[in-house]
Length: 223
Image (cartoon, rainbow, N blue to C red; front, side, top):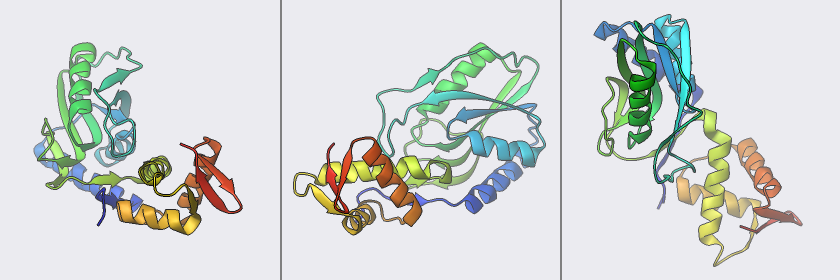
């Protein structure tokens, strides 16, 4: 049985969802003057919304909570705070997904207090309604059962963290793994196939980080 329910999201789905979200925003009558991407996850959706809504102005803010794939940090923080004058402008704050919503709440409060837009609305591709502490003004997909969405812009870093997590939990029973054994463990844990190239790249990165050691075509856990 899969231990961490995971959905592999494609680039085509991201474009489709962003276009659908743009339709939702348009139908509301809201016309933003500027789009604010919540980095890092909101960068791509925000840029696509700029395209679909014909908005020229794009800025970003980094509100960070998730420090490792499918694991949560103790609290959200604003990294690299800076000043932007959004007075007399309607702003749209954009993220990829509203999970707990804590990073989005922090970003919203910071933008309202420090950047002072005339109006601020929130948009996200997905909203996990059972666990989110905030409901975005606009969303395209409501998710009712928690799942980790593996977006194409985090494919490599998530695969690295996923392998690290699975092998860390299994190291008590086994310390030396073949390539195929790691792939099977990955599939058992997450139920997704990221593709051979991403898998090989992740293993190379784990070796470079000193978390795995490659010996005679097998991998020794060092973490």
